[in-house]
Picture 1 (cartoon, rainbow, N blue to C red):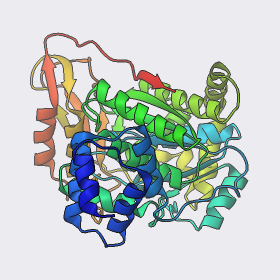
Picture 2: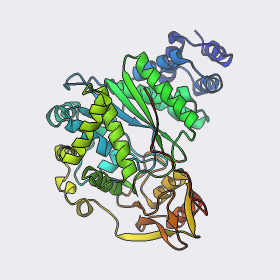
Picture 3: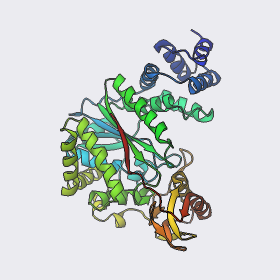
Picture 4: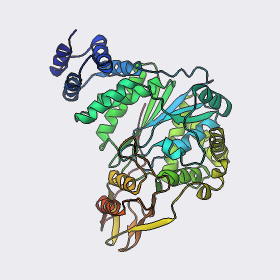
Amino acid sequence: MRPYDIILKKRNGGKLNKEEINYMVMGYVNGEIPDYQMAALLMAIYFKHMDKEERAILTEVMANSGDKIDLSPIKGIKVDKHSTGGVGDKTTLVVAPIVASLGIPVAKMSGRALGHTGGTIDKLESIPGFKTTLSLNEFFENVNRFGIAIVGQTANLAPADKKIYALRDATATVDEISLIASSIMSKKLAGGADAFVLDVKVGSGAFMKTFDEARELAEAMVGIAKSHNKKAVAVLTDMDEPLGKYVGNSLEVLEAINTLKGLGDSRFTELCLTLSSWMCYLAGKGNLEECKSMVKNSLESGKALEKFRDLVRAQGGNPEVVDNPDKILPISKNIIYFKANIDGYISKIDTEKVGIACNYLGAGRAKKEDNIDHSVGMKILKKLGDSVSKGEPILELYVNNSSNIETSLKLLNEAYHISSERPVLSNIIIDVVE
């Protein structure tokens, strides 16, 4: 078997079999196949694509390339949630406690911020003392005892995906549906859950900018899950504006806690309840309507809030954050405003630029080794469709001495469009792929 023949076969539109995909992926991981040949195969896939069977095989090979987490020591059906990334997306911090409060084990491995999107692990580390690194035994013990644990991903989970993604990033082959879907699902399969709820973002702040792209990705990921005998549902959700009212690590924890107290933004709360309902449904707790009623009751009764307190306490954090988040969380006291330059309605937001502007304040990272400032971020005073007067604040910016305020304000000026006509607003839930 030669790399040349496999590259040629895919370049000409042929279908690769398991032996060929395994040979290329593992050969590249082991250093036996050079970058230039793997890059050539990725470019061939970019132009000729993969069918459902090829996607399933590629996902399986990457999932099997390193550690696979065996969640069998945890009792019950394990349902994982994954978001394709957005701005102000703190849904895990609300959804996980809701689901866990209903007796569904939440054994969650989450990532850090990179690019314009935030990371759940960075947000949790805003809470003083909170440990996001646990041994596997501690992880299992916490889930069995408290029903919930959220930790960072292990270093050797799907290493083939990490190496191939770095090459895709350098060769302009990132945005191909088969490669995106297999990258996401390889980590999900290696993580050991029984079922998956996939939050696929659509819009200016998402990786998938159009509905058609997002729908195709959703169908690809659900198809991969089913081909590996896993249940999955993909929920397509709007990301044409930041999610909720806050962007930034401590500020998003604050908003998550307020949401668990029943004081959340209505669109964000609707998203959390929808994702929680599907997780409950996949866990076999009832039909979808019964699950919707259960998750709503969990939120309204305070059970979900107490489960969040359990999570914080179990992982070494200060549980007082639940009662006094604005006092316990590191939140900057230095506030400036981004203001409207004309009268009108906020008609369009380039949400990706909002995320990047927040990073320039210090809330995110451009490279994995960069440090972040948990205390900075933004409070959204005016949402898409709201009327504004010239000079009226649109955003509160929480800044520090190291914040690049000038660049952040420049990006926000480019991101926010004000016009004389109020725009037609999208629902937060756009579609569902079962």
